[in-house]
Image (cartoon, rainbow, N blue to C red; front, side, top):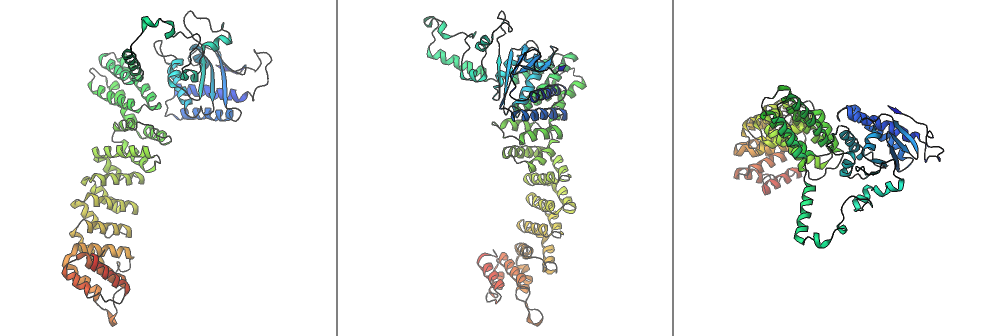
Length: 565
C-alpha cells in the first residue's frame, strides 16, 4: 500500500524545497498507477494508454518547475531533496521502490523529455523484472542494455561478501557508481572488479596482432548476435517435444508476452519470425490439444485484426521509420487476407512516406494472392478502401473484378465511377469493354468523357453505334467542348471511311437559310476526320481549308497537318 509521508517526519529540519513537493508526490502516484496498469492490462487496453498519459501530464507539470528530477531509493521509499515522497511498506514485486532497490539502484535522475519515448520502455523493463526468475537478467542489466538518454541512475555493487549498502558512506558509493555517460565514455570505477592489462606481466600474456584481431572479432560478433530468434526457436522446440499440457500452456503464455515485447520495442523482424514459426508449430506438433493449437494460430490472426493492426499502424505513422525497413516488410508479409481492408484504408490517410511505401507493397501482395477479398472490398462502405481496391484491381488487370466494377458504375458516387472506368480500361478484357459501353450514357459528364476516351484508345468497335448515336443526338450538342471533342475523337478512331459521310455533312452542310452548324461542332468533326487520316478524309478537309470561321479553319488546318491533334 502506498502512503503519503509528511516532509520532515524522519529527516529533521530541511531547507525549503526547490518547488512545491506536491508536484513530485502527484507524479509518483500517477507513476505507480501506470506501472500497475502495465501489469494488469494489455497494451491495446484503453486503461493502459490513459495511465501512461496521466504520467506524461504529471511530468509536464514538473518540467515547468525544473529540467531534471533526482530521486533517491531507500528500500521501500523514494526520496526527493531529503523528503520521503513515496512510501510503500511491503517488499513485494508490486513495490516500485523495492524493485529498484533490490537490484542495486540507489538513485534515478529523470530529465526533460523522458516521458516521450523512454518512459514506456522503462515501464516495460519493470514489468519484465517483476516476472523474472533467478536466472533472468536483473533490472540494472536490462537498463544498461537499453542505453537510456534521458534517464540516468546510480547503483551499488551487490557482490557477495562486499560491504552492506547501509554501511557504505556516500563517498564510497560514488566511487563504486558510474553514470551511463561515464560507462559510455569508458571510464572505470576505482573499485572495479574487472581485470586490467597493467596487472599482468606482458611477457607472459602477450598476444600477437593476429590473435588480438581474432579476439576482437569474436567479441564483436558475440555482442552483435541477436539471441531473440534463438529464444523463440527454443520455446517452440520445447513446445513440440514436451507434450505435458501444463508446459505447453505456459509456453503459449510466454509467446503472447514475448510478442508484445517485440512489437513495443520495434523488433518487427523477430515478431514476424515468431508468428511464422508458431503457425508452423501449430500444424507440426503431435498430440496437440485444440485450445493449444488455437493459442498458436491466434497469434498470427491477432495481428491481422483491424484494431491491433490499426494501433500498430498509428504508432508507425506518428514516428519516422528507422532502417532497415525490410523488418517491417517482413512483418507485413505474414498478414492474413482480412488485413487488406485495414491496409487499404491506411494508404489513403497516411502522411508518412516510408510507411505508405511499405503499405503499398503489402497491399499489392495481399491483393494478388487473395482476389476474392479484393473483389469484396470494391463494394465496401469506406470510400477510401473502395478507391484503393479499385486501384489494385487495375494494377493486377484482374478480369475477376469486372462484375464488381460494373456494379459500381450503377450505384457508386461519381468519383468512384470514374475510378471504375479507369480500372476497366486497364483490365481491357471483352467483359470490361462491355461495361465501358454502358458508361457512355452515364449521368455524369466526367464519367462519360473518361469512358469514351477509353473505348477509343482500346479500339472497341462494338461501341461505335452508341458513339454515333450520341453525335447525332441533341444532348452532345448542348454539352461542353471537352465532351464533344472526346466523342468525336473516339468516333474518328473507330469509324474508318464509313464515318466520313456523317462528319462531312456536319463540316460542310448548310442548314435552313444557308446557316452552318455550330462552329465548335464543325471543328470537332474536322478533328475526327483528321483521326481517320485516309485520302477521302483528307480530301474532305481540303475542301474546308478556306473556311471563314476562324475556329473551324484552325481545326481543319491542325487536322490536315497532324491527324486531328
